[in-house]
Length: 323
Image (tube, rainbow, N blue to C red; front, side):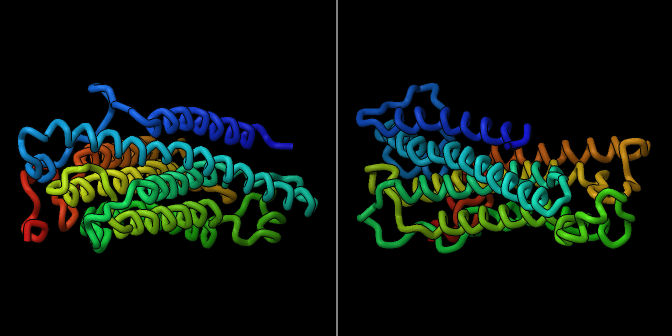
């Protein structure tokens, strides 16, 4: 029997899938034309300068259609990831129940929920990019490495955040006394104190692998205008990668900010009763939200500080890209 949290995960994931499937079918249908108000990342300055002025609006229309068809796979995959997390949680609960502990592994449910969304975001973006029509006019992808499209700082941020979470888990396991009720459970599952952080770390690593694959996949055809094809390909890939890396940045950051005061399975030495904890947690949470908002804003322009894309305040391609 599924627990209330697992039912929530299944229902939430199913709702995301049910919302994503009609959207996917709508944008994939022949003759699909986006509305002028439909959401579409603004083209990077170096993309806007690529076509002839008379063809700029046609370029924007083509990119809207192609990008929506690729991105529509992401929510479906995120919903599937959440349902997968619920299935893993259910299986772990059965293991603990059959061992006679009668205790569910509730502390890792949140990491399975967010980890499923992180995993789904990466797989969905990669799947959508892979299904985009291949551009037979070009032999090589517009980037060789992930850092050609996004700044190394943006790539390393989610990995750094989840490493901080793992460090807190290791510290608690080594220095804080266990709650009495957790002793037999931890004896049977010695990895449990690190489970939450390890699950998130695994999901973030897979998301980064998907981002690397998106950067290096064969050329995709987002527009029929050959003179802008490579620049548009580079911009759309950067936007998709930004979405992939934004998800773990937000989710792991908020969980880690909370973990500074959570003694998960251990006697807490830090809590909301401490006068300094609430402002520290608030500042950390707001900083993570602000960082994610910057990634989202910059990513919509197809410029995230990569070697070949630069930042939004740069009006043209970087010298490496131009050369």
